[in-house]
Image: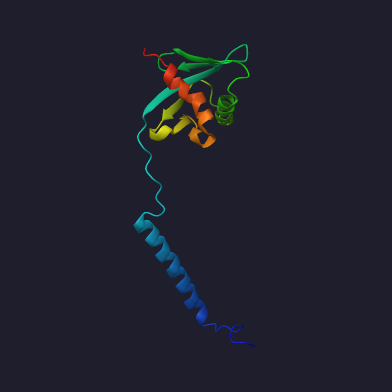
Amino acid sequence: MSAAATLSPRLIPFAAVVILGGALACATAARLTGFATPPATPAPVASLSLRFADLADGGVAVRDAATHQLIATIPARDDGFLRMTLRLLAAARLRRHIGEAPPFTLTQFPGGRMALADPTTGETVELEAFGPSNIAEFARFFKTRRPA
């Protein structure tokens, strides 16, 4: 047998201590240097509380939750990304037996980043991940909102 094939039983505990010590040293170094710390979320530029309601013709009414003002009406078969995003968040509410009443929060961050969140479920969709044309479907709500 070769020397590599035989391992002294006395070396096994020593090897385990070395491996655990190395792992502990790596974890400590990562913690102290902030390697594993995610960047802080920047303060929002703007935020809207919105309610979305299905219309009889298949459209979707978008209302400011605070003022009940109609912000936009999405015609049937338009804005597929917006509809898909709302279905995703509505399905999470349905699984938790939450109704349609609580508003969603649309938040705009510096640099054009935007997120649609459901505070009742904790679900958030980071809209910039889907490209500028899909962000535009939601960004227009900030532009069309009129002061109360």
